Every structure is written in structure tokens, then in C-alpha cells.
Amino acid sequence: MYLLFLDTETSGLSPNSAQIIEIAGVVAKLDKVTLKLEIVDGFESLVALRGEMDDKITRITGITKEALLLAPSIFQVQEKMGRLFEWL
Image 1: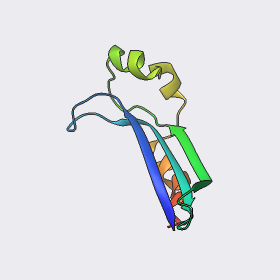
Image 2: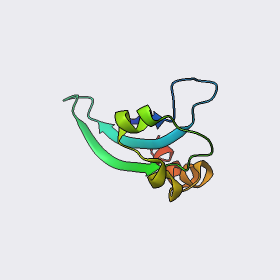
Image 3: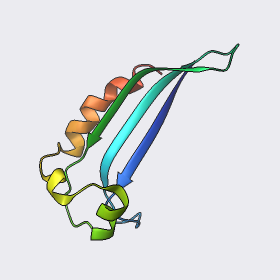
């Protein structure tokens, strides 16, 4: 059995206006006998910011607005991240 773990960082706390600014995922294979996990694939990327981001988010995450200027769009990240779902 394969499991997918996802983690995101967002530009704020509001579910209505915050955007994903970083996303990471790890696929792990579960050994059903030993219950041990083996990481088989992973992905991490910043995501271009399309709006504003509060300075407190930089303090919390360490992600700067400048770093996001060079990041790929959410659509580019989605295409690259798609390979993780092929394991499931």
C-alpha cells in the first residue's frame, strides 16, 4: 500500500483569500507486516504569489516575497507534482 503525505504553506490564514505559496509531498510504501514506511518519491516547490502576503508569514515560514517572484505558477507546480499521484 502506498500513502501520500502533503504539506502546504499559505500566504495567510483566511481560507477565502490565502494562496498556497509552498507545497511538498512524499509518497511512502507501507509494509503491512512490519508497519514500516519507506519513502519512494517526493516533491517540493515554492509557488508564485498572485497577490499580497503579510510580513508575519515570512517570519513564520521563512519564505520571502522575493523568493516567490522566481517560483513557478500553481499550474506548473500541479503538472510536476502529478507524478506523486501515479503511485496511488
